Every structure is written in structure tokens, then in C-alpha cells.
Image 1 (cartoon, rainbow, N blue to C red):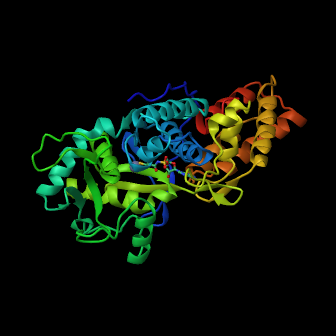
Image 2 (image 1 turned 180 degrees about the vertical axis):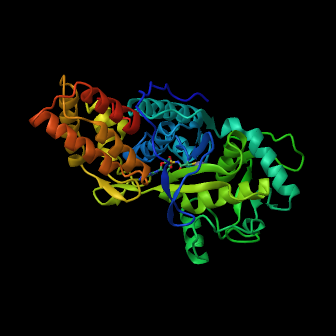
Image 3 (image 1 turned 90 degrees about the horizontal axis):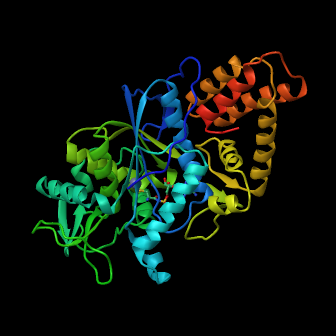
Length: 411
Ligand code: 5CA
Ligand code: ZN
């Protein structure tokens, strides 16, 4: 699958600081320690509806990681998937009497446009579940050979306890895991399973649903389970022990727990990822924003209504990525005011010295992506530039490049 176009990232003087990020597995803010090539996998959309502000917040968060690593001198290998075949997509297509593949295609196209407008640096590999089916089939076959998978009425399940480290991403107790599993696409009560938390690897063909031949007499025609999809894609493009596995906090369990265990059993090595990084969940007027609740604010609708995508981006960056927060119309008003102020500041021929602004923005972002503090550093400079001015002819350009390269805000 193709990603979306990249725009140029301006050069900055000097080099960024090593990035520290919160890791859900250890509960600590720890340094990322990538090699020359930093490797990141972020879970992509299930394309049955348009990009809402919660999705956008998640992808803008990991865009800050991408930009901080580039600034620190790393090459970044970024991979993102598209869950272009799965239950929610098939259910929506059936509800609307639409071809599932056409729905996935249309929403993925819209997502690319949203990401482009928000200035998100594209992944090197943008990979659909459908195009990964041979990798998923190979993974399921290996897990069977390892004794880590078994059959339930023609469907194949992963034995979670074949990974002695199972549970190490979310560190949740059994009761919580079972409840979340039932809530988020799992089937703890299915008869025939060896353990309630065992998760579906491969689902045999159902009438009226798409299915693929496997070329393996032991594995009937069918379609991939969700968790093995991300494990197989991450291992194919990044290999094991990659630097960051990312997504919203709703993915901690079961998705990242399961994909890590599948990956660890497949490779026989630990950890699948060195950091598990999760963004908080964005709500609307106090409720979690979700497709099933229908309380959505779409990026594409805001754009159509004439809102500057850079203001949308600033509205997201004004909240620290780890906290949950609720979108309100005021977020956008405040961001538009801030954007106008910054643009005013950088469009002047001279301004107050800005070396300290670059240093502050770098320092705050390296500290677990403290974007609100980084914005405040630019706010202070812009306020002074606009009210008192300054003698430095290089400063406005430096602030413009700092905002662009590190925050992805084009002024
Ligand atoms: N396709 C899977 C991941 S493999 C999936 O979760 N798709 S999704 O479309 O439901 O979500 C896409 C990304 O947005 C995920 O990283 C998810 O954690 C994140 N996300 C979904 N809802 C919200 C929300 N309300 N706030 C913040 N992030 C969210
Ligand atoms: Zn995923």
C-alpha cells in the first residue's frame, strides 16, 4: 500500500537530545536508545469511518517521536498498518450495503489526506492486513509447529501461556484482562478454548465474508485475526526488539499484549518492542470519542469547515499525549489565536534572539514529549516579538524552522 506524501523537514542548527518516553510495560519514563536506525511501529486505523480527533492525536503524538529522533540524528524506520479486513469493517459495510473493500479504500484515502494536511511524516512502510496474508499464514503455521496454536472448530487460536512473558505489557490481573478481552473484540467464553484469553489467529471462511486460500492443507481458507496481523507486519519490516510499539491506550490490552506474545513466541526472543508507548484517549464533551458511540469530530469535517489544519494540530499539541482529555470547540479557538500570534511573530523582519527557544523546545520534547511546555516556549518568544520586537534578523526564521521541524507546525 502506498503512504502519503512527505513534506520537507527544515534543517536546524546542532542536534536534538536523546528522547525519553513513558513505557507502559515498566510504568516508567525511560530513555529510548535506538541504534543508527530507530524502529517504530504504530497501529494504524481500521478504515470503516473517517479520522476523528482521537486518531489524529495518536498519530500526531508518534509524529513527535519521529521528528525528535530525526533531530537527534537517527534514520527512522517507521511502519504503520491498516486493518483493512476485520469484524468492525465487515459489519459497517454490511450495515450500509457497501462492498467492504470499497469502504476500506475510501476511508484509507481520506486518512491519507488528513495525515498530509496535518503534516504527519509518512511511514516508510504502510501495510494493509490483506496484503500481509502470506506473512500471517506463515506465522500461524510456525506457531502451530511450535505447539503454540490449536484448532477450535476450524478456527486457529494462540495459546497465550506459550509465552512465559504473557501479561508483561499491561501488567493486569486476570479478571481485568478477561473483562477487557470481552470488551475489545475477544471471546473469553467460546467453548473449546484451552484458556479464556487465548486469541484468534486465523478464522475459517464464513458465508458472505471474504476469505483467502492458505496453500496449507492444515489451515483452511479464511482470514487473519487482528493481533497476529500487527506481529507479522512488525517482524517482517522491523524485526524483533524494535524501539517503539505505539498506539492509543485502548490498545494496551489485549492488542499490544497479544501481538507482543505472538512475536515473542515466533522469534524466541524478548522483548518484542523495547518501549510500549500509549496516548491518552480523547473524548467529546466528557465521553470517550468512539465510532460505536457516534460522538465524533472528524478532521476532514473541520478542514471542510475552513479550519486551518495547523490550528487543528496545535489544538492537539496543547494537551500532553499521556492524559485523557475532551475536545471542545474552545480548543480550536485557542489554537487559532495561538497560530495567528506565532505567524505574526515569525513574519517580522527581526525579533528577540531565539537560540534559547530551540533549546527549550528540544529539551521539553525529549522529556516524554512535553509538547505543552514546548508550545509555551514559542508563545513567550512570539509575545515578545509582537509586543516589543528585537534586533535579531535570524530569529524569526529560526523559530519558523523550529516549529516546523520539531512540532510539525508550518507557519
Ligand atoms: N486497526 C487497529 C489497530 S491495529 C485500531 O485500533 N484501529 S482504530 O481505527 O480503532 O484506531 C486507530 C488508532 O487510534 C489506534 O492507535 C487507537 O488506539 C487510536 N484511537 C482510537 N480512538 C481513540 C481516541 N478516542 N483517542 C485517542 N486515540 C484513539
Ligand atoms: Zn495493531
